[in-house]
Image (tube, rainbow, N blue to C red; front, side):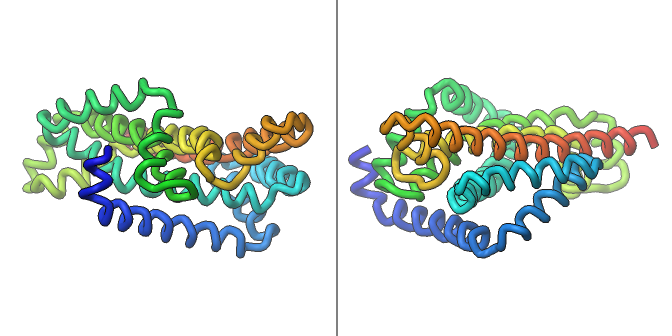
Length: 271
């Protein structure tokens, strides 16, 4: 660790600035949006993904409950960390999953690393994040990315490998090269699996955000931590309930999107 800090400090500074830039842009945008606009967006997402009007109203009502506790700004900060972490996890994770599916050697190298990452306690990820980036939002996002990335890597790999060989052979017979096969055949057919990975990555990011409050991440997790330290039961209950409501909203939206992709794939196969 000391050798890395000595020889790659400029690299970690650059990475930290990039993470902070992504996070602050998302956070400032969410805090800039008026709360009725956020409720409308959440409601429309709920209606569009679940195809039920009452689902959209229910999700908007959940966000309204969070606001009634006085945690609107903190919930937007938490949501910003989740969105930034998930975006960066997907940017890194999906290409790694594709590489694993395309190359057995890469899979043999990455698979044990993923096994180790998914067996380590979540608190362990705070140590390298703290050493490389200090206290604040950047180490929180970094730790969340490392913790939440394995599911999308694994399920991207699994989804691509489950594409029937006959479909790939048919694409080759029509003259498709490896790039066209990947983007026009394998990725579209593996989207249901990838969407499940995105759902799991998002939920793991939410779980880690609460723990990341211990290294300076502001948001609902910090409220829970302060309530525990001061034995404020009511404050802890409200902050904890807000996290639960946010988790329900995010899970329902992402899992419904995964179900839509699954239904779309079934209709393609059926036709």
